[in-house]
Image (cartoon, rainbow, N blue to C red; front, side, top):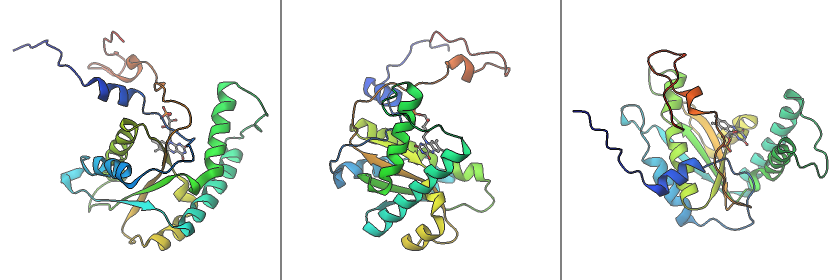
Length: 218
Ligand SMILES: Cc1cc2nc3c(=O)[nH]c(=O)nc-3n(C[C@H](O)[C@H](O)[C@H](O)COP(=O)(O)O)c2cc1C
């Protein structure tokens, strides 16, 4: 049977998904445990290989761990500036590239002092590839991000943990057989939410053959 009826999607969900951008600037305002818990709960609803749920979401609060994250974020910025040969940020420059650089640099300057920090860890299952391991944690990350956006929060994925992994593992007591997937910063956004900017769907989706774009009305 060919049923061409298009089911209605939740407008709210559609809005949330299409505006869940990385948010790196936060108001100096507390994010309550209740609000954060909704995000953690949504993360725990994510799919994982064999429903193994090989994850742990660690909310980082102590002054000691926050200081460690801040120094890791500072080091990350220094490495990025060199690796990408980033230009010095010119005072007052208002082009999109300068604005993004300024926001990223400010995010890393604040580092571990962001209102909330959540570490996502995964326990690799026997015989799984790294891609499969990532597949059992990043859906939880995305659920968290969507639940954050649905409540008006902003959040950003970071890899700052890579700049302090041994100390962080030690401080948090992460078992040797677990990996750290990402560190999220979370807070009430300064400024509003805007639509994600992505390539056209015809670049991403195909029919039958790699080079045959999906017939989109987008
Ligand atoms: C695996 C991964 C690693 C990322 N690492 C960082 C990061 O270290 N710092 C950061 O500010 N954003 C990071 N991001 C966020 C991306 O930069 C962001 O999602 C992308 O530029 C799209 O921007 P948008 O989400 O605002 O639309 C990461 C995202 C992913 C999926």
